[in-house]
Amino acid sequence: MQKAIQAQGWKCYLCYYTDAEYDQLFAKISKAAGYICRINPGSYKGVTQSKLDTFLDKLEDKGVKAMSSATTMKKMGAKDALVKIAALECGLSCTAAYYDMKQLEAGFPKTLATGDVRVLKQNRGSQGEG
Image (cartoon, rainbow, N blue to C red):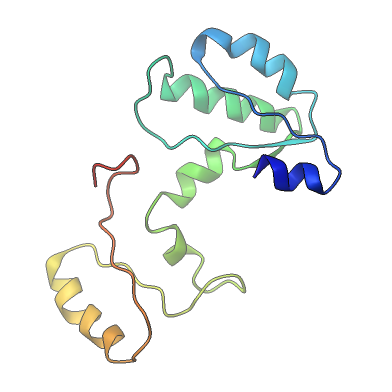
C-alpha cells in the first residue's frame, strides 16, 4: 500500500502506534494531509483501544483526513460493514447478514439458489480467532 501511494508521487510514511509514542506520533501525523489506519480493534501489546480511539478522533478534530476514523470504524463495525453499505452505489444489494441460526436457515439457501458466489463469515473476531 505504501509503495502504491508513493508511486503516485505522494509522500507516505509507515508509522507504528503505541501508547508510549502517543504524543510524538500525534505531532507527526497531525501535520499530514491524511492517514490510513490499519489497526484491527482488539488487544495489542502497548496499545489501549480507548487511547487509540481518542488519538484518531483528535486527528479528525484537527482536520486530518482519515481512512478510517475511530468514529467511522465504530459505526461500520467489522463483518457486517458491507451490509450497512449494500444500498449505496459502492455496495452490493444482495449482501446479507444473519444474526441467528433461524435467519441463516431461512435466508442463506435463497442466496445460494441465485447461483452467485457467496462468502460466509462469522460475525466475530478480527484477529484470527473468529
